[in-house]
Length: 133
Image 1 (spheres, one colour):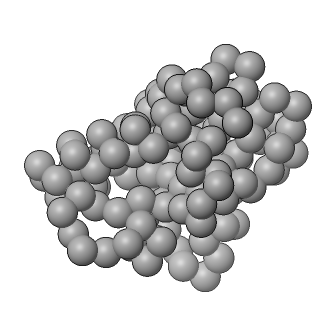
Image 2 (cartoon, one colour; image 1 turned 30 degrees about the horizontal axis):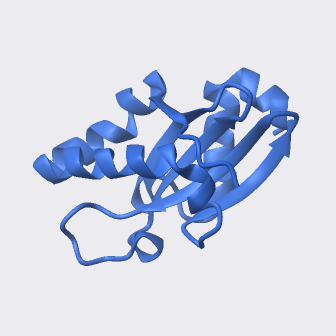
């Protein structure tokens, strides 16, 4: 297994939208949580071996991944927290792009997967094309 770190980039869309909710709600805990997300994404290959990250789709040298995370300092596991990141892995460039950071409470719960796919389709047309969403 390749142990090289990935570079992590938070997309502007996710900074402007859902991350603002986390910053307001969790204040200083959010900074430590975001640091943890960055660390985990730098070592995403290891996370894909656990139940914390789910491989959604593969196309060429790209992978779409859903990652569970917990807020720093709260005694809730990442899986049961309801907090998710949708990631685009560019394996050629060794970059993880954080496309969405959300809580299940931030999006309609009738079909979480379809909701985040719709957001990706609307906000990231190039990714929609890559994965034929």
